[in-house]
Image (cartoon, rainbow, N blue to C red):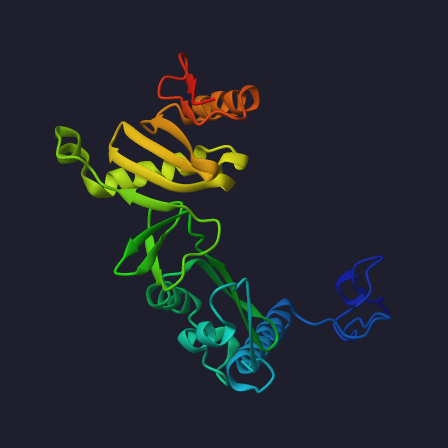
Length: 264
């Protein structure tokens, strides 16, 4: 009897794997890449939904308190009233830019304000007030002028240590060219250049033209400053003159290279 053929016996060295079960390693069944991507997408969607709910729908991250810092003349109550912080609203939804604009517009004494979110449930108002460097008397009251030349407030009493501006420009080509506002800015510029000791003793800043600015100091002393140009050099010369002749009554630094002292 003839034995089985090669086709019947199968190829030498090959086993029949048609009925072999799928391989399961020690880590368990393998997840297909598609299924893994679906799971990751579902987890990301759930996480995003939870984040949105936490920010807008939950009671965890809502405005509960307002803190104000940096106020000196202004009070916390008036700043917070103008800020009109939406207490109870989701903290993430507060329009901080609109609050900053409102505070600067309604409270001109504010030079800068930062409205910040203080997580998880607060709003912080960080205020920087304008500082007066000159006063303009008007109708028995005083208009405060800051270092930028901005008239920002009118007060009943003159703040201590702030000089009075006497802006009495003479009719001239200089006045027509520069105008009163430019002359005011020049006076502000001069006050910023003064040595600290001189600034402390300055009672009045007089301006009659662009290049005719003078100072009245305590003890009836006078400084003829000239224009606002070369302020740093004039300040150095003035300090030296005052040290050399502390009893002098008048110091002229109009031309820093040729200063003069009189009334000793």
